[in-house]
Structures are given as structure tokens and as C-alpha cells.
Image (tube, rainbow, N blue to C red; front, side, top):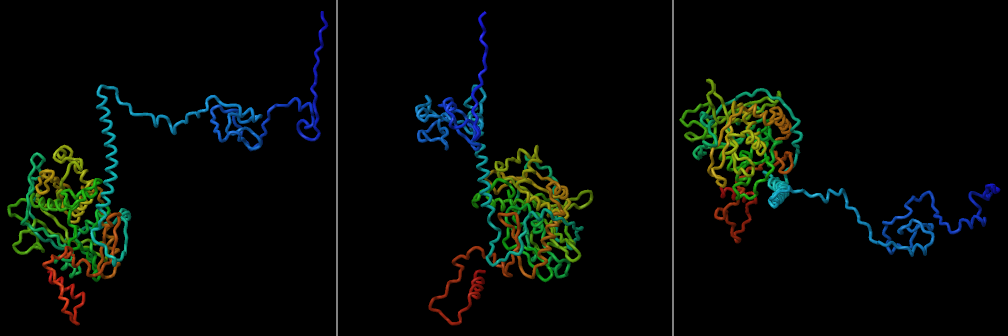
Length: 561
């Protein structure tokens, strides 16, 4: 056998560096071994990146620029290079930048509604486009209606003068927390005469509708508080401290539901307080579509404008209250006659109940309340109030009374409560104040859509005031709490005249102090015709005893009257 060679283990040379860590700098063997080996210096603050990035785009203007300290090119393919000449000679074959991903999930921008695969694809596309257009129009009309409603309701019911001082500013949010329980009312006087209700109108339907008649010969009285002779007599007898009418109290009680502006005059005379309405005030005019989201046309010449509908609704309400009565001459007369009617004058069927409530030990309130008819039920006289809701445009409300009253009567009433919440609440409050047993509500529509003179009665419904108030979320204790709070504020005022104004744009009321002669010449709001105006004096007639400006105004007013 051949002699086997013995394996030998050679130990590499280990160089000792007594001056520090690693091999010494002057060791030639180490330098020859590690020659041309690339080495990238780094420190602890640098981030560890990629060795190379083949998707990186290298702008020409950044070529040759590397990281500080002689590291790799920040904008090159490699994060480190040893030879600059070798790095500059290297170029990628494809220099185009990679495609940038779109923002967000891919389906958000690329997904499209898939139409059903059927033969009439064109009809399906048309319907889809029509739905999209209707959605756009809906949002556009909502924004537009909101702007138009703000402009339509931005007018105050009374012109605020610069010399009026604001004493109180009460937001409607505070009214919701008020609560006051008042005792039973006491009748101080009963005036007027009532006709009996015709029960045949309870069977009227949209198929057997009746034409609404006009009662031009009957007079309706809307007298304010201080002009009422019975209230003056009760005030002189110190029967109460606060005096008002049912329409004024209902306006205050339902103030949080109101949208349009209104105003009430407050007069403090001695230790008594009178709530009045201005001459020419719209407080007794009925509102239409006040609480609806859709706005009405702004043009006054339009028959569907707010002002035109208010006049139409007021006349409908008056004529309806007289048509549903039995006109056989039989009337129920109360202890005193109508205080506003002259002898032999034909007046509407109405009775006035002057009632007194005790607010506390020192303050009592007297109000004139109205009832419109009565009906004999089981040998007893049942008092009732009569009011009418009117339909003017089914397309605007979305409910056609002629088609829905028989089958969906609740939906019709719910729509009216949404669009006329304040008006219906005031009717209910007046029925509660008068202690009426029944409140009859008629549903009256136009004979033709564009005819606002001729109307028909479609239905008449009866409700008990207390149950109906609970149905529309009208709390009597909250109603009296609002009145009690306003009375307490006004009783602290000095003697004088004040006005309570509902802000036209905000849900709040303001109390102003006004001069004593305010609202006394409201009948001269329209300009005097030229033929009735007093001609100016000739220029040559100049005298030293020239009357003052105030005397001239008095003379001009006297001539105008």
C-alpha cells in the first residue's frame, strides 16, 4: 500500500492589534486579502434599505448624487456602489416609471351598476337615468325650498322702529320645560245666540260632496280686548287682573309651533294687564302650509301664495261655520245679547263665554271665548266649535282628498297636522278654553284646481277636544305654563305700552317697549290719494304765526279723514 499522506491542519495567522478592535491598519497581509472588496460605511441613525430596486426611476438631474458620507446613490438602482464609473455605465433597459395605483379601493371607481340582461336594455337605461335625475332634482329642490322658505318667512309682522327698546328675548326652547296646572274656569257672562248643528253633514262624502255657500249678509266680529264693552265692564268691577281673548291666548299657548311672525300688543294700565291686537293685524287670519317643508310661491298675484291662501282659508272657515247649521230660525239665546251687533243686524251664529281662571292668589285672568253651534244629545245641550281645513293643490301635499278621504282618512289628517300644525293646535286650544264638548273639522276642497272662489265640502269629522289634544301632543299644563310665564314677566313692567313679536327667522319672541301713541294711526298705512291731499300754501303767504309741524300733521290727518 502506498503510504498514506497524513492530513495536516494549518492554523491561519492571527494578527494581534494591541491598539484597538479589528486588524491593524499597517498589516500588509490583511490589506492584500481585502483589496477591492466593497464596503459601505453606515451608522446607527441610517435606515436599512434594499440592496437594489429595479422598479426605481432615476431622474437625470439626480444622477451622480449619493448619500452623505460617500454611500450609494439615493436615486439609482443600487443603494451602494463602489466604483462611480461602473455605476454611471449601468442603465436599465426599461426606463419607464411603473404604473401608479389609483387612490382608494379599486371597486370604488371602476364598479358600475350592472343592468339586467334582457331584451329592452335601452328601456332599462332610460329608467335608471330617470331615477338618477329625480334624485338630483330632489336634493336641488330641498335646498331651493329651504332658501325660498327663509326668504318668505323673513318678514316681520310689524315694522320694528329704531326707538323701540328690547326688554326680553325668550327662546322657544324654554317654553317646552314650563308646566302649570290651572283650576276649573268660572263663567262670568254668556252673550250671543247659537243655531243648531245639521247632522246630515256628518254623512257627506267625497262622492256626495256639497257646494260651499257664501254668507255675505252675516257679520263676523273680531273685536280686540280693550274694545270689548263686556271686558271693560269686568275690568271696572275688578273681576280680574289680566284680560285677553281666546285667539290671543291660543297664539301664546301654541307659540313654539309657529313659523310665521306675529305680534301682540301688551298694555299695562294701573295694576291691570291687557293683551291686544293691532289695528290691521293678521292675527285672526288663518295660515296655510305654515309648518310644511315645501315652500309656497312668493308672488302675491299667485292664487297659491301664502297671502292669497290665508284670505281664502279665512273665508272658507267663516262660510263653513254657517252652512252646517239648521237655518229654520230656531236659536238658543244666552242671558245677554251679542255685545257687538246693532239692533236688527244679521250676525253669525256665535256665543261668547267670558271665563275667569285663577293663576295665583293675586292674579286672575279673564278671556272671551267663542263657541259656534250646539247640538242636543240625550236631552243635553252640547257646545261645539266649527273649523275647516282647505285643500288647494294635491300635487304639492302629495295626498288627494277626493281619493283618500274614504279609504285613508288617517293619512289625510296626518298630512294636515304636518303642514298646518300651528293652526290645528290653535283651534284645539280655543276649544279647550271655551270648554266645548265637540270640535267639528270640515275638509273643503276647490271645485277646480285653479279656481279659488268655488269650493265643495268633502267630509266633516268630529273630535273631543281633550282626546284630540292628546293625539296632536298638545299638553294643557304646558299651554298654561307659557301663559303664566309671560304674564309674570309683563306684570313686572311699568305702566305703558309694549309689543310681543315673534322673530321671523328664529324660534324666539322679543318684548319691546314702544311709545304710547304707537299703532294708533295704522289705518293710514296706504298713501292718501292726490285729490284728497291738502295742497301746500302759496309761497307768497308767509306769516309770523306759522303753525308748528305737529299742528300741520294733525290738520292733514283731519282733512284726510
